[in-house]
Length: 161
Length: 175
Image 1 (cartoon, rainbow over the protein chains, first blue to last red):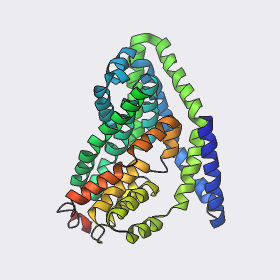
Image 2: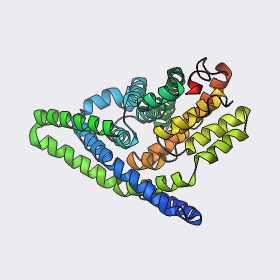
Image 3: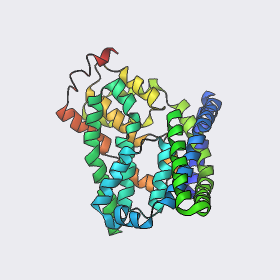
Image 4: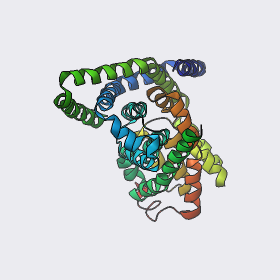
């Protein structure tokens, strides 16, 4: 985590300096701060929910359905979980992290992350409204096997390494 | 945002009651303790992530993306469109109206499709959150594995749905 903080701090500083040349750096700070303030309640609630889930979900369930040993079942469940996790990133990522830390397999976790990224139902009302629901169906239809594939690749990485 | 908050509050309250029913105050306090540790672990990263997001949003404009999309064609355009989707700033309430503005203006369906897939996969403003709120390792692995997916989706759309859907450029294009 420390390395990530250092890398993103450098990135933030570089972007700040680039925007400084155009005189837009404070607009960036304001924009980021505004979004942080509006997202913070959701982030905190999601972390609370993640803490509850971590305490509530029995270890046996994770082992049987979501762990590396669950194999393809875990990958399918992960993809489905990502599809149905109808929250934004602030809420979904902490929940996914807790499921991973509780013992879910890498394949399941990556399938869930991919499923959430590609199949997420949260954007459906916007997408369907502006681009048509056939567009959304095609996106989900093409994305679904790819998310399972992502889970399989991650599962193989975990098994082989 | 408001609906998400309400859903989360309802879920938290219901699950807290379930926890209390199963294990009393001890289990409730244990879950609060775990949530606190998660929050503390991610706190600094969240602050930095939002600084990066804010700076990216003022740096990359919709006009810049529009210029890129106009410049390329064929398979190369699918790659450019996917990457441009990942760089596009803003949430769905900005992103989808922006895309809808292209309909009926001669931009092929598969480019719009790969643009959406690119936004879903590469979204640069989401990456700091993904790394900070899950783990950097998971975020990197997910991005590496799914990196070609938007291209694949774009190529399939180009091959099998070259014209998009009947209603795509007609009725909805006039929206």
